[in-house]
Length: 267
Ligand SMILES: C[S@@+](CC[C@H](N)C(=O)[O-])C[C@H]1O[C@@H](n2cnc3c(N)ncnc32)[C@H](O)[C@@H]1O
Image (cartoon, rainbow, N blue to C red):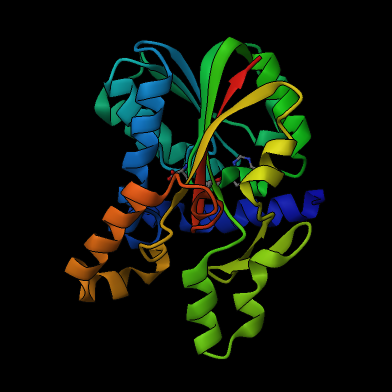
């Protein structure tokens, strides 16, 4: 991924920052996955700890954790997203517990603090040009025994395969199979995206981190962009959501889903 691709991705997210708390960035299906991620951070990182958010978007997670007593440094590559996060922090009066910085995951060498936990929600790390460099920087920024909690877009999303294949959009159906950065459209812009299997993703972190767990997010439940389908069949889909909760961490099933949630510990 080169500088031009990083800038294209930045422009794509800038273009949606104003309404990213609406259906595109925070609908019911996203909120459901968010809760699983919040639970993971709460159970893995001690209360009151210092957290770093990679790709914070409009700051929903940063505010949640600041309200619960964590100290959060929220970062994002999109200046417009960072503006939204700053406004959200100010509106909540949480300036003593949360700050926001315009910083891409490829620029973590500019940070000097020490953190107890680092999290990244809904795929910012899929836009990282060099995951091994991110791993080395996370190792530098995290105290020994500190935790990483990341939600990452996976390669095998049965809903997506079926949805696009049934419409004859075979190229779109297969986009997650691409090697290297692939162009994904959003709002007439391009997001340059790497997709990963959980094990592939972990390989980039294995030198400094041990793998604690990983699980599927939205494997049985439709992915967030099929929210209209979900709304038409809410009760049926809620049952599928319960299957995600019960079975999402099982071998094989955990390798699939719209996203996976992975927890790693600094050696
Ligand atoms: C799908 S959004 C998720 C936002 C937020 N974490 C949430 O849960 O709502 C992905 C975010 O990653 C950010 N992003 C994309 N490329 C990035 C990069 N290279 N470094 C840091 N953030 C990046 C985008 O600007 C966007 O805010």
